[in-house]
Image (cartoon, rainbow, N blue to C red):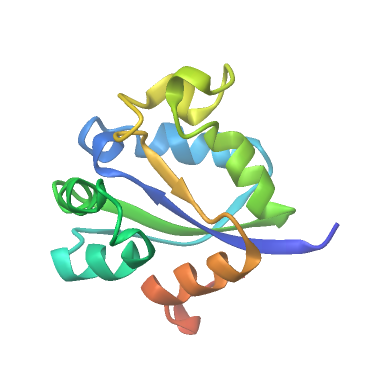
Length: 140
């Protein structure tokens, strides 16, 4: 398999509870490498732009408010089949449906406060990485 890069966010519910290190360790233990990472406090404009594809959905406003409620950690993960591997490590969006050992099963508080976000396709990964990182910030 080819080496891929994917985008990840450690969400406010997880950073508030000091779970960043535990979550990063799960990614690294799965063979993913952090090639860029920064802790930011997202603005409302950033959240609305980043989640713009969901702007017509009923949960959009609540999602944006949640994402600006505390700092987040945005990062780029690299490895073989990184997009799918990241999604496997995260687990199902609904923590009740997530497999044992996944981030969402262990750390999520609810379907909305589910601790992590990850790209779902190569196209999304490219766009999401570029939203938060310049090429100079991506260290191989």
